[in-house]
Structure formats: structure tokens, C-alpha cells
Image 1 (cartoon, one colour):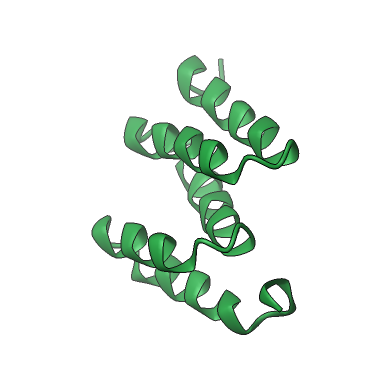
Image 2 (cartoon, helix red, strand yellow):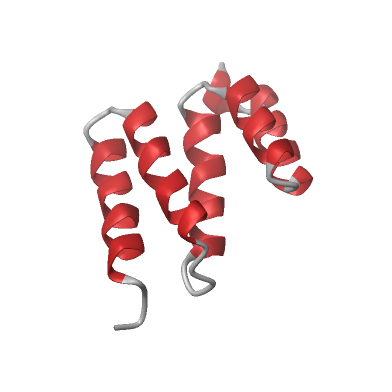
Length: 88
């Protein structure tokens, strides 16, 4: 398989949770992917995680998470969402 099966399943599950309006569960599923560290799916998972935090209105939590894993670029992306039309 192209990806670790558990990581891939968690990634797909995250989108299922997101699509049914459960951002906290979607975020938890993507964190499983990030923690597994599969380099083939890590960057898409991190990008989607930033989106979920931003669009889910969990800006402070998202910024704190990304700072804690050393991804200040994604923390800034979440912070920038505060001024976007998505947050109005």
C-alpha cells in the first residue's frame, strides 16, 4: 500500500467526521496520522489539520498545537484565519 493502513484509515475517518460536522473528532483523527509520522501522508494531514482548526473556530487550540510540534508556519496559517471571511 502507498500509506500505512492505520494512518490512511485515520486520515479518511477525519474527513468523515469533518463532513458530518464533528470538528473535534476530525482533529483527533488527524492527530493520529501526525503522530504516526508516515512521511507519505504527513504533510497533507498537517495541512488539513490547520484547515480544520481554522474553519472549526478552534484558533487558539490550533496555534498552540502547531507551536508544540514546531510548525510555526501552520500556527501562523491558523492565526491568519481569524481575519478571514470564514471566521466572520
